[in-house]
Length: 409
Image (cartoon, rainbow, N blue to C red; front, top):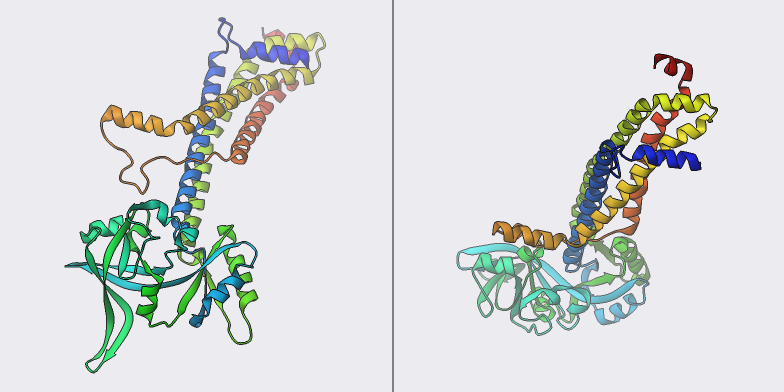
């Protein structure tokens, strides 16, 4: 194997004194670009997925426990729920469809009543407040998203009207109940909740629903959001009894398709980008074929002096291995360095062209998450593909007829 490795390296290098031949250089360049691109794009998509997950699943309930009737003595029920494995927090929760309006502008929203004291334990909303604070939310006050505030043309201190789905009956008939709230805070997630989520205190929610020390449901925060359905089902099983039965719903019901779409998009883009690695592997195949063709005379002579076929085959496999290892290593280094400095690169481009590129999107920077197992999978798959591309033309060496080759010379 020693002579095979040395000759493989010799054929890998250029005859003119350069480190690599031109064909080897092009194969290495293609493989470097392919691996680097795959690492960069998949890392950025992982980052976007995590950011989307954190910003949306950090605000909406992981799971809700509810029953047909309003929940009495919910403090005792919460103590029982907190004993369930993987349930990190449980708080009272009221939510209803409503219409928010200011002057001529109006929009359908999710009116959400929370306990200001415990909201920071189940939601990231407190960390994304532009003005005001959820923990200081009082009766008669409301917190809305930045996009919704801009749409309605309101700011902190203004009053807005909320038309709820609750019905008030009088001598004149039945009418939806309307309430006036004062804006005490504005949050900005740069995600969907900015448009349709409004927050009031749990006390105000009880007044709107005509509850007397009751709540509509119990909101759960779980340790693993991807296991929300199983955890919620286990919770329902443990707290249900002969007198009261409970049901559950999770984030998958309202936002599950969104994250499934992101997963499918990652898969498709990953497969498409892997075609670049496939092209690079084809370059290795072409390089090995050309090398075998140009070295026919040398191969014939080595066969004549008794060098085994497996040694000759190994020469060109080593040539392909050198290209693969260098290309994949450079691709790994380039991919990691570019991913880590991607936001600096975007900032440089924005400065050069004097324009912003990402302000139109829900986040104005490139989040990234480098999944080590994913990077290793990319490298191993690329290496396997390149190795297969080198083996096929190398095996052709064993079929050479040295008499015919030397006679033609």
